[in-house]
Length: 433
Image (cartoon, rainbow, N blue to C red):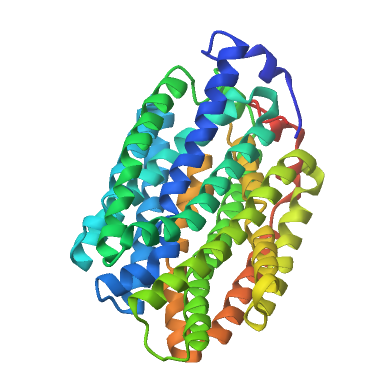
C-alpha cells in the first residue's frame, strides 16, 4: 500500500524499534493462541452432539451463537477503544476465551455448553479489533503486511486447533468421551501466560496516530461520505464471505459424518464413529484455513491499491467453483478443493481490514471491528442456515447454495467506489505497506 509522511513523523508510544518488534511479535503470536482456542469446537462438533445428546440443529446453533457473540461485541469494544484509547479489552478478551474454551468439557447440559460458548465468543470478539489495531500501529509503514501477518498467524492457530483437538480428546478419552473433553482444560495455564504477555505488549501502543482526526476532518464532506460508503460495501462483502465460512464448517462436519457412516456400513452415529468423523473433519477444516492464511499473507505483500477491487471481485468466484466441486471429491482431492475454497472466500479478508483502516484512520479499531466481528455477527447465521438447507434439500444442494453466496460476495465487491479505494489520501494515517 502507499506510504506517507504520517508514518514517519508520528511517533508511537513504544520507545525503541527493537521493543516495537517484540511487541508486534507477541501480539501476532497471541492471535495464534486465541484462534487455536476458538477452533477447538468446530472439529469436535459431532463429538459434543453425541456426548450431550444434541440434535444437528442444536449443534449448528451452538456454532451460530458463538459467532454472533464474537461479532456483536467487536464493534462495541472497538468504539470504546477508539473513544478512550485503551487496550485493556484486548487482553481481557483473551482471558475470557481461555477460560471459556477450557471449561467446555465440564458442561453437562446444552444450556451450560451454550453459556460457555457465549463467554468464549465474547472473549474472542473483544480481542480481535484491539489486537488488529495495535498491530496496524506497531507495523508502521508496513501496515498491510503487518495486518496480513496477524491474520495468517490466526489461521495458523486455527489449523493447529482443528487438527489437534480431535486427537487430544481421543487420546484422553479412553472409555469416556467426557474425560477427553475435560482434558481441554489443560490449555488454561499456557493460555494465561499469553494473557500476561499480551497485556505487556499492547499496554503502551496507541490505536491511532495523533493527526488522524485532523486529517479526516480536512476531507470534503463528499470524500468522507465516499469513504464510509466504501467501508460499508467492504463490510457487506465480508458478511457474505464469513457466511460462507460458517456454512462450510457445518457442511464439512456433515460431509465427514456421511463418509464415516458409509465406510462403517452403518446408519447410526456412535461415539466412536463421531470421533472418527472428527479426526477426518479436523484436517479438512484446517485445509480451508491454510488456504485463507497463505493467501492472506501473500495478498498483504503483493496486492497494491489499484488491484484491490479486482482481486476482491474475482476471488469469491474462484471459491464458488471449488465449493461446487467439493461434494464430488474424496481423499486428497477434497483437501485441495477445501484449501482452494478458503483461498477464494477468505484469503483477502486482511486486504479489507487494511483498506478499511486506511479509509478511516481516525477509527482504526472500529474499522477492524466492522471488517471482522461486525461481519461475523450477521454471518453467524450461516451455520444454522446451512443445516436447514441440508435438512430440506440434502448436503449436495447445501454446497451449491453456499457457492451461490460466494458469487453474491463478488457482486457486492463490484460496487466498491474506485475513487475512494484508489485515492492517495486513503493511505493516510500509517496505512502503508
